[in-house]
Amino acid sequence: MTITEKIMARAAGLSSVTPGEIVDVQVDRVFSHEKLGPLFFDKFRELGLTVWDKERAILFADHGNPPSKASDADLIVKTGKFAEDYELPFYNGEGICHQLMPEKGYVLPGTVVVGTDSHTTTYGALGAFSTGFGSTETAWIFNKGKIWMKVPHTLLFKVSGKLGAGVMGKDLALHIMKLLGPDGANYRAIEYTGGAVKALSLDGRMSVCNMAVEAGAKNGVIEADGKVEAFLKGRTDQAYEMVKSDPDAVYEKVFEIDGDSLPPTVALPGSSSNSAPVGEAVGTPFTRALLGTCTNGRMEDFRVAAAILKGRKVHSKVRLQVIPASRGIFRQCIDEGLVQIFLDAGAIWCNPNCGPCAGGHYGLLGKDEVCVSTSNRNMPGRMGDSSAKIFLASPAVVAASAVNGKITDPRDYL
Image (cartoon, rainbow, N blue to C red; front, side, top):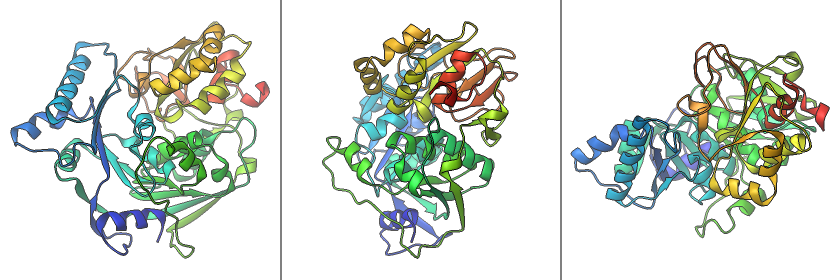
């Protein structure tokens, strides 16, 4: 079996499973946030339901926090009240759910983690099976602790070699999007392996798994190793199993990528699958830049960007908005002097939250604006006005481009 099949078999209490099989999966953690949780809170109470395990259901207020409009404030109040009524952990303004779930020790290798957010696929970077659900299904899981799922076929990406200077996990994720397209992995698991994947930091792996859903994948997963163990040290006292695919595991399709030859990559406006080497977009002017989100709001991302920005200034026509993924990352950026580097360069530093990525909070784009962003989606209207254009890129590309005022190959600044 593959990693995904092994985890699902364990969670279903079975010795084995096969792709296409319907199984009843016991989840290890479930979460919701203020944008989608309130859709089921009232009905949950009305039906007199209880939460199956108060330590395994978690709530967040992260998408629009602090709120910029009264309706967002109401959603946060409702989420806090539900957490209080059912005695659930509630992280209000601490950061983005997809950073806090691993950071707080809720995600362990070999476990099943689900939530009301499509980018829950991020946690596959820790060797977990993680996927997003709608609000109604999540309400069921809050009450029952389990849900039926179909075992997905698995696509295997073998990335050999090692990514070069100025090339990050985001570049690999965008390249894979080009290979798959927006629906090339519909209800598939994507497993990533090979020397280049193993060489990635955990931050880089989270960026790759985060974008698995952009190709329609049910989940993305990378075999857990010593880097995962080091991250979890001090975050949990629970036992866990680092699951490996069997040597004779069956994959629906195998893709091979030469990591040594992969260039910095950008996704052109309209779709994350419109990916191309950065050279095809070099020279494109823009006025807005975003560094952060659940895809690239971690320490490696800020260290790479700060190395490029140090001693330089953001172009006078560019507004660079920097948003850490959690309070812990914010604090570490302060301790390492990175915040000062960004401020000296002329960037705007913001509190930990999702920001403009989902199109509902500060930093939105106006008519015909062009933005270079480390976020994961760039369809029309994603970050504001539908006429705005969004290029997706790595933190290295965003930082170098912010200095130049035009999309730039970051290798020119290394």
